[in-house]
Amino acid sequence: MIALHQVSDRDEIAAAAADLEGRDPRAAVRWALERFARGRVAIVTGLQSEGMAVVDMAMAIDPDVRVVTIDTGRLPEATYRYLDMVREHYGRGIEIAFPDQALVQAMVNEHGANAFYRSPERRLDCCHVRKVEPLERVLVTLDCWLTGLRRSQSRSRASTEVVAVDDEHGGVVKVNPLASWSAAEVVAYLEARGVPRHPLYAEGYRSIGCAPCTRPVQAGEDPRSGRWWWENGVDKECGIHGRPLLPVSRSA
Ligand code: SF4
Image (cartoon, rainbow, N blue to C red; front, side, top):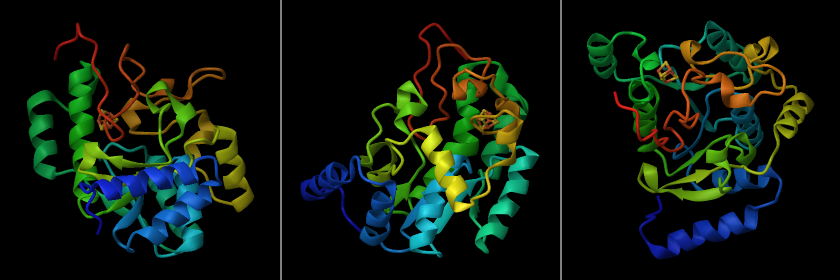
């Protein structure tokens, strides 16, 4: 395990980021799997195409690599079907992290089951309880996590580094192999590799999350506009990759 408070470690991460920038994403995946001990490095994915491309790249290097997803308790039925498709494709399952039952119970009993529609604050609280808190429990078991983030996904992801120290999560190393890829490159990769895609893409979804907070988008619309579509002026983020700023005038 590396101690990232040491300047030399940050120098190492910065050097890796510079070296891996612009290279094939598989180089970043290989660097992560070779640099960190098995079990202490994992792909954390919401099972969208980007994350699955990283999973596939990692599985090709280490079929036993740790892969984690979060079952928020509000996922679309199609996501559970897709989990079975992925299990069949790779001949192994994906580790599933769950929210803390007591936190969910307290939130739902106080605010209701669908309070996320009422305000950005309630929505972010739900995302925190159902996504961020379980993620944080996973991240404390890791030295490095890999994601499917791409710069062109949104304004808030435009400065995504291929490798970075994730100070929001205690200094764990975060590797984003697809940072410079386009959506088309991701789809082409999955098709070339024969990796099944989440069934909801065929129904017009371009970004897939929880069932009550995700809907299909029309051709030409921002791919992430189908997430939390009732909100205005709030980044289309759940807090896993940075807590979005709230509009100044909004209150709970
Ligand atoms: S996406 Fe919606 S249901 Fe899922 S955790 Fe966030 S607010 Fe809750």
